[in-house]
Image (cartoon, rainbow, N blue to C red; front, side, top):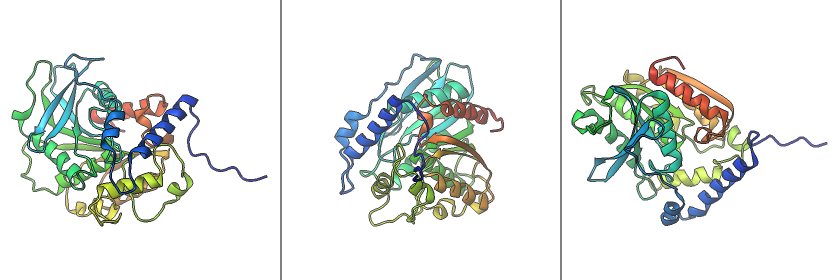
Length: 335
């Protein structure tokens, strides 16, 4: 009798399997072999939610312009409280290339974070490759911190609570987790006088997207897992990195990601989320080790039965568990 192949996904309903297959198929259908993307088709497939100044499930939202010159926009989610409230600066996933702050899935995620944590969530609609390669997304994330640092930029509209940017968290999943890290690193390596108001209280890296030239055991073992595949991630890195760069580039490699952090005390404590069915998990654990080697605090949250991007899908019990962890973290509790 032959040995059964290892499972590539946890048990799930048939409709969830179909949904995940559809996501993978549509992703592949929009990317071209020459490194370009059918952006018109992507836009047509990306279901978006409108901002709502009227609270929905106790959370309202409004779209902001952070930089008219780029232009750079963001969506601010805020709970129905008097405030002041901490701020979570959020970066959506999608391999750098896909989705937006208005995408239905991420509008829902940010709304949940704001409701559960009692924080305002500024979801940055960063520029995407291949039209805007490295370092555009990092520049946009850092620009969002600059925007928050000036109290004159904070919305004064009715219902928007005061923003306490001295309690600012950076958060993101997948490529957004990579962006959140690099924005935190840029903040940490900036002169101490660069920001007058913003203070980073934490980094929440949910299954961050890092990589290298080698194929890790998890990438080989979980070939065919939902959402993430080696051909997709290879294409996404080619779309994001500068022309001619390989995956030893600082945006991708862990050595580049943590370079210089040993000399900075401003890099925030990190919470790292890893899923047991995520092909990227080996890179994420190496990321944890790289930060700790630089003397940085890292809390590791492992979900053995979680696929990549699990928390976007409320069907998974781990999605609810992670939201409660984020709530405790933002409130200052132990994770």
